[in-house]
Image 1: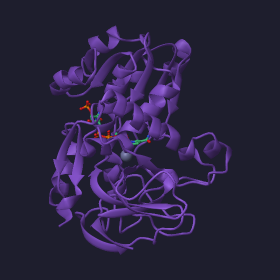
Image 2: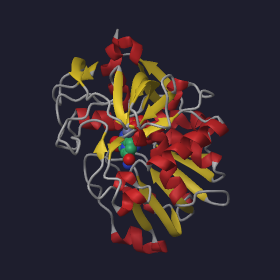
Image 3: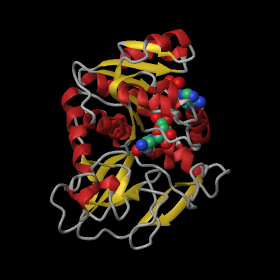
Length: 346
Ligand code: NAP
Ligand code: ZN
């Protein structure tokens, strides 16, 4: 199958047009003509090889929405013309205990990412900055026509990555939740924590985002450089979700936790973050992490969003503006997720 998109050729150059082939759809595969593709900070980490091991040429993109143009003979959930989405995962073993528990990102044989990865068969995967994608039905989601399609794209990564830990750690009415960092993940974290009924506080380095944070669901906003405000909130939180993309002091956020509270790391800075034992033993705190979410819970999140009318706040961009979009994401200056209009491929 012929595809065209935008690719990074190395860690330092701008992305440029790229033609490539995808496998022809098999019996279990769905082909999606891509309409919109979100820009996740993980795209930038990987394009720039900040995590190491990047594979080039790289077609990034794992927040993918569009319409089904073909289905294999054994596909039952989709027909041609349906709206559909693809997220971060395109292959897992589906047989190990984690897969069977619906926790496919933690597949014991390894999860194959939508891009910058190799399939079990050894083929490179190419992501959503492209006109089409082919993926097994198991990794394709149904999307409600009730929602604005472009604003659904970020739910496939930023949405599920915040939804999954909020649900796993039981964030709900009567709980006090903190969200750290108001970017793509953080703004979905605020929307979901608020919608699930928790008393929600945003911790930010950007004073200018306070009004937006309240509109997005924060009951309170704390600017983290205000050390008195941080002290006032110490020991008060059941759960804190850390969505920060750059190195920062985890001990400050561990200090926010009450007895048995959990700090969950979803942000993936390129450097290890030192943790003091004293930050953990006090209040019997837990430090944890979470990676995207399983296929079933992703569909549940999308269905919840359709029911509650929740989407991402997006800024639309085009392929020729990618450099600028990346720079603005790195500066923390995006409100609150860029989405590429794939028609701009031409
Ligand atoms: P993003 O839109 O760039 O948001 C990151 C936010 O972090 C910024 O808006 C900023 O918020 C804050 N920040 C940035 N630099 C900071 C610094 N030096 N100190 C403190 N705060 C800083 O990124 P994203 O797309 O939401 O992704 C966030 C992170 O999650 C990335 O590392 C990404 O790779 C990772 N990620 C992980 C998963 C997973 O499965 N675990 C999935 C997707 C993404 P304020 O302006 O409010 O401070
Ligand atoms: Zn992502």
